[in-house]
Length: 147
Image (cartoon, rainbow, N blue to C red; front, side, top):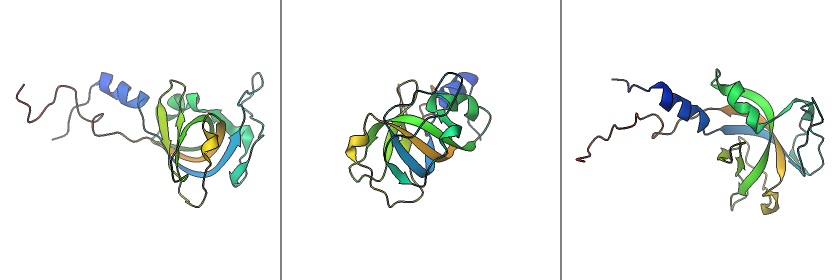
């Protein structure tokens, strides 16, 4: 039997989406201040992988509206690095609400330095939604609980 998910939980799930990037390219940036009316972000830092088309980059805050009706999209986003994992092969970025979003790469082979933390990067790849097991379970459904 399928679990019933009400609208409130669905909204919560949309805003607490775990985003997986099959990133093809990451380009470190010192800032992402688009000019008035433009989404373009000029590259100023080191490039890891292939060069990114910065004219199509969207701030990570725009993802909610793009992902509202789609399970995945291919795009370029800009985001601030929250953490680089010890092995340097993956990282997390912060969204516009301050939540961390994991970034996973399809091609391992790049080692990202710890000094990327706090810098704005451009990521080009596939973005998809993933629901965690707690988000897919309706609230109040505590099987096995005697309380």
